[in-house]
Image 1 (cartoon, rainbow, N blue to C red):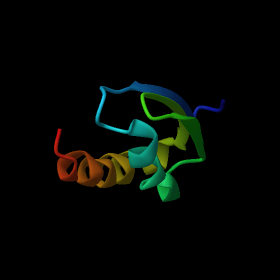
Image 2: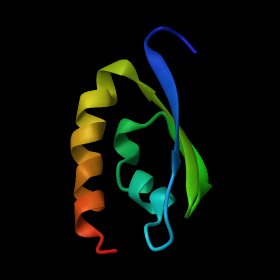
Image 3: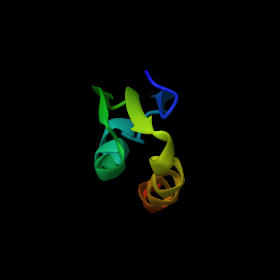
Image 4: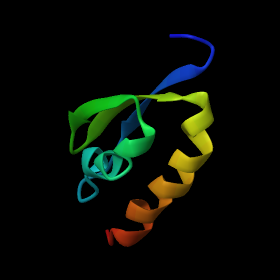
Length: 64
């Protein structure tokens, strides 16, 4: 990866499909994959702030 991009990984809990939440934010990601309880993603540094802001929406909407 270049200095302008990064990778992340996510783990979830039963009842919160992390892969679905990332899918709802895919416009800000270079790529992502995984399944309901774990996922990985790549994003550019300039997309970090908008991704975080958008990612909070599906997180808040899911009732667990």
